Image (cartoon, rainbow, N blue to C red; front, side, top):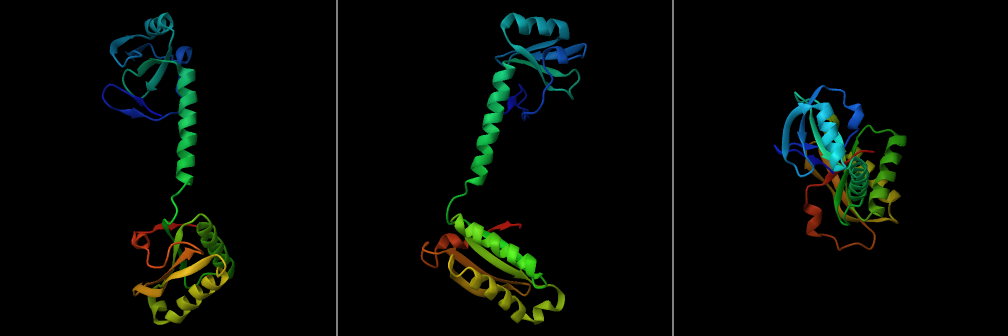
Length: 202
């Protein structure tokens, strides 16, 4: 939830100062309808807010003078918290068949490789296709068998959770990748897997 000032400036929810917490001598006031009432002593602004049954909330403390708005502050904070909670849920609820990417280096340690494999498994469990990539640095690209072995280990560890949609192949001299799809998912070659993948960090 945002407060929209008259000039179109969007202020994200945060801990605003309200009512008697506002100790600046003068403020610029916006009423509950978004109409600018002008600059006035803070005491007068508080009296106006009280007479209309609203709180006086400082929404732009960095302005000179600070900008305050008349609003139901309790309702605003409740709505802001609810909308932030819904936004977090929406970010977690990703569509199925989304292509995600997990990257590894050729010199990855066994512990990190297992952690990456668990991450791939979790993404597959969420219904996403996963592009598993191995990055080569310097002369490492002279030994593609290292990258192939890494991808093979990941695929073998996930044989019960995933099918190989795209076999390991070089996208460039420095990147070898394969695409895994959840078992029982769409047939190989689904064009949605060709979208730019979202990279995931462990």
